[in-house]
Image 1 (tube, rainbow, N blue to C red):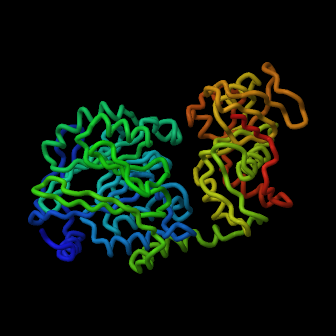
Image 2: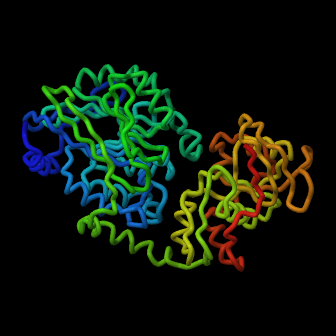
Image 3: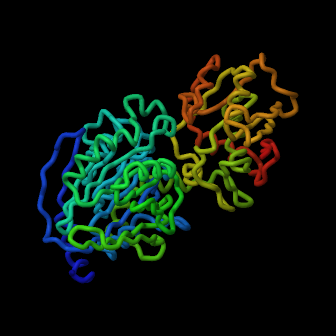
Length: 488
């Protein structure tokens, strides 16, 4: 067996030669096999997921220049990402992800899974990013107009063939803007693997599922297919400080925003796994790579002046919660109601993606809090429909006071709702409501908003409405005011 030092030297060479690759579209072969180096028995895999455009350092986030430094120090044989490359920062979103792919090309990624947020900019920009990448985008269970998205890839590393199958969450069409995935079909994970896995097994010694799926979906896949050796996953934003083992299948995740890089060490004995270990590496632990910093510099300059503009001040930290009321969610909902000029505002908590720290609030921070290009939509909504919406899950609300029982089934959780200073909501009455274009299109499964009357998309971005509202109010509230009461 070669020493780790000898293999590290080989890995440096590999970064220039690239491993052997087989790409699969459907069940047909769409590539050629290039033979790699002589067989060795020690392989290192580096992985990330849910980076969401966090290319620059920010608190716990080390940034892509530090990820590049870790890659140079680690010398991995494969670098994989489990999806959601885009949406979350101005430096990524202003360029529609071009900056992200430039950096990933420089780091030397070998394959990525297609995440739900890869579709946030629309099919056209995603097609451009796939063409820009020096690595394949993989997802076996979705069909898109982008022919270059492949089902799987096979890499010949150290004489061992690694079959990498991409998967995307079955909930894709409700967890990204539905209008961006009208041309996308999503198939079941288990059914897809039943069709795809045998063909990959015939060409590979080690099976990796590179997946942007939920923890529940991870376990379903691992239990249905014990022949899978490794699941590199994302989507839940929860890191696994220790890998999960489901039978002989290892499951790994790095959290979100590039806070950690994952390292997997695999020792083989005649192509059979002798030992496999995994750990997380904080991205703040190394210096930045100058080459990647140089790539980022022009992108950073493009957005720096606008994003540095101060729109207000936070007297204390404002954090959000997906389980109940928060000062930040209230602030966002109040901004929507003000921007739409309506009695009530409702918005999904999942659209709030960052917090405000105490101190100046810049346009850049507002962008991070509301990174999606969702617009304000106004409508007239009957009270009975409003109650159905509120009974499903916790939302950010403005203009009403709501009491929920989360022990009840979804759809039956609403206990009481009343207008602030205006009495209970009547089933038959019409109320003016502001929401966002994501929910109007059925995002998060909310079909009820389409039942509204006089629906009007203002074209005003949510983050623009929030910036304007913060600049207008005297002081940013930092404590919840009791508008959402949760009973469990």
